[in-house]
Image (tube, rainbow, N blue to C red; front, side, top):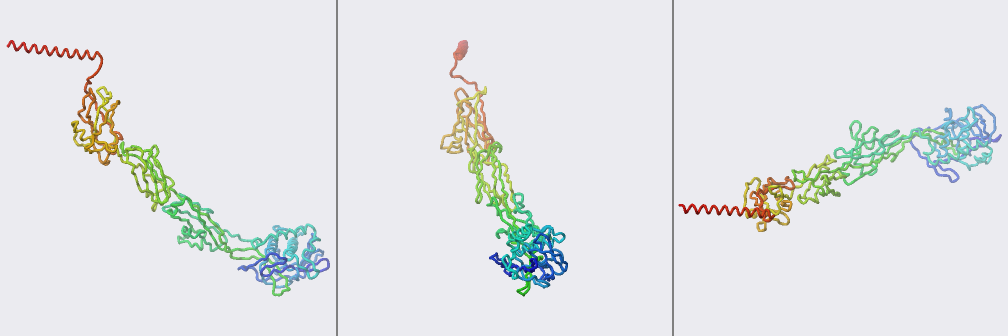
Amino acid sequence: MRVRKKKRLVLLFATGLTLGGLVFASRSTYIAYAASDNVPQTITTNNAGKTFVTASSGKLYAQYEGQWKEGYGYHRVNIIKEKGKSGRDSYIFCINWSKESPSNKQLTKQYQANPEVQWLVTDFAKGHDKAFERLDNAGADYDLADYWLYQTAIHLVACPNEVSPIDGKKPGDTLDKFAPQVRDKVLRLVNEAKKHKNESDSEIVLNQAKLNFDPSELNINSGDLHGDKYEKSFQVKSDQMHDIQVHAAESKNSKYLSGTRKNGSKVDWNNINADDNLKVSIPYSDMTNNSDFSFKIKATGHWNKRAKVAWIYGNNDPNTQHVAKWAIKATTVAMEGDAEMTVHVKPSFGSLTFVKKGTGNDKKTILPGTKFTLTADGFSQTQTADKDGRVTFTNLPLGKKFHLKEIEQPNPDYNGNYEKDIVELSGDNPQREVNLGDIYNDKKYQNFDITKNNIKGESIEGAQFVLIRKDWKEPFDHISVDEAKRQALRQVNGELVVGHGDQQPYIATTGANGHATFNKVLLDHPEEKYDYYAVEIKSPNGYALGTTPIKLPNVGPTSPDVVTGEMTDNTQPIPTTGSDYLLIEATAAITITCAVGGYAYYVSKKNKKEK
């Protein structure tokens, strides 16, 4: 590129970039790479020797294709264009400061420009209204004015220390003579260009790639449990990409991925389509020991990238100037791990509930306070029946076989040995809410309450009873005291039981309230029913002994927890102590009896003598 200052021709040169991308003054090393693209392999320049432009004074002066507009500036550059092209896209930028502008030459593509030069070339290509900087007062020739501005910046970026062989000047030696507003624009361009250190920062991408998951986060919960699997669908959305692959970040989780094509065929995980129906499918049995589980799914693919870049053109002649020209570069870029989706699995938990009852009172007895344990592999939970007998176990991991066991029964009249395997929370279609309904404990002991009252309904204290068990519906209406004692229940280890004739019968005596109780009568055959009889074996003074046993029929597991019986004494009590009135009454009765008896004897003797 040629530059003239006043009447002296000054050649502008810049540092040449080798294939490795090296620049002078210990600058960074840039490595260009080859890729499949549609960049022109050759370009042909115009007659650069007859064209130049300068704008260092703030005004535009140009000679172009034989039309002159005289003017002098401190920094003139040759106008380099590609033959056959027009407009802003036809401009070519010189790279070397120390070589002639390539006039009427065919140049071959060499390598991609370094990021700083590339940014300047591609930013210029954006146009006058969109470029980072632009020159004002250029009139209709603003493209030409901006070209001069960006060409000057390229010299300062590419080879700030190179010396012209014409006058020994460096690219920046005349900056102090520029109009201030022009100099400031040049320096701003240079500073901005130096911020771009890699290719991706300096190119202009024409088709941004898109690769993402829909949804971006997959949350799986209890509502996604279908049969024996947690399942939820997702899709992979993409644009400008091909050969999309989907995989779990950790290979051990790849088994949870499944999917089908739109036509119903099995999905190819190395070539995913946008309309593929993809699923995360996790056997619920894999979640039995997890309260929460997360893993990541990644998508990768190849981007059909198209970008504006700057290419360096030259030839094999070392004296030929290198130039930069923007072009569209088409490449295939592998996007490793470009998209990622986190899968959160919050497994469903089951519950178990029931009401604890006893068989007594026609199976209506509530057994509050009963304690249970529910156990499984790696799991244990204890719950206690509330006042209504309700027991509830929650947060039960599905897929386990549980065992329910009664461990404490506060009601001494009932067995505390209930056990059951709970299998409903596992299998091919696990339940999530298991309700056992009412579960029963068989009655272990039966309690009896016997009362004795007089004809006035008043309690009789001191009456003694024994209890006899008979087969259901066995005839029994009378028994002697001695035989009753022989057949009576005995107390053994705190329980009232049949047999054990070598021990004394158990005798219950009515208290002041007239009640006699037989507690803890052992139901040694809870599945059978018996008739029980309370037999009075001794009555208190003044009362007759009850001769008819009190029948307590059909006693078994579903009988009331306390079976009651009643005896009424119909005899008139004979007082043994009392008031003077009672004594007088008794004496009078005796006197009358004796008088009547004496008179009868007298009449009898008289009748015998007359005969």
